[in-house]
Image 1: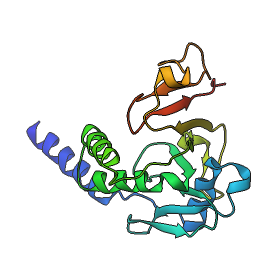
Image 2 (image 1 turned 180 degrees about the vertical axis):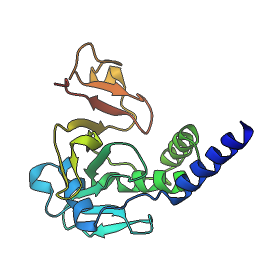
Image 3 (image 1 turned 120 degrees about the vertical axis):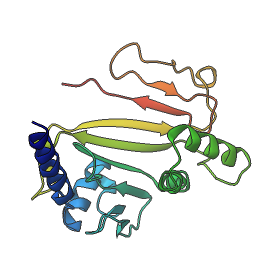
Length: 196
């Protein structure tokens, strides 16, 4: 019996070692990533994605005020996002800290301290992030199209509060805007439309 379990463990280990993350071609990554952007921002947005070895890199330089992030092939489902370029220092700092192995609380605390000290600059005006997600079953990896995707909206308004905006701390119904992380550098309006 122990031999059977040992053999199964070897087979499973070999299968896992042989399994590799499939990286989509750059043009497909770009096509999928820009689905999160408003239509008039898609063609000229800067796009980050993944090289064939999995390294995070710029896939396309942009000429407008939008940045898009391709789907992470190591995670389940499809999730792409686009945001106003003024948020790039904040986003890039988060990527660097994540690569250094910091957890979400550490990243939040470090960026909060750096924004307050003016080392890290946040936009002076509201700035929006769009997040588009869906299931792998509804994704066509050959065309980059995602059926029945779900769009969420995040509007960053650093240090805003419920009192300063009139926004609730939680939504009373689907699609109702609300404020998350109020009073911090990461204060933002969340808008999660009702799902079908």
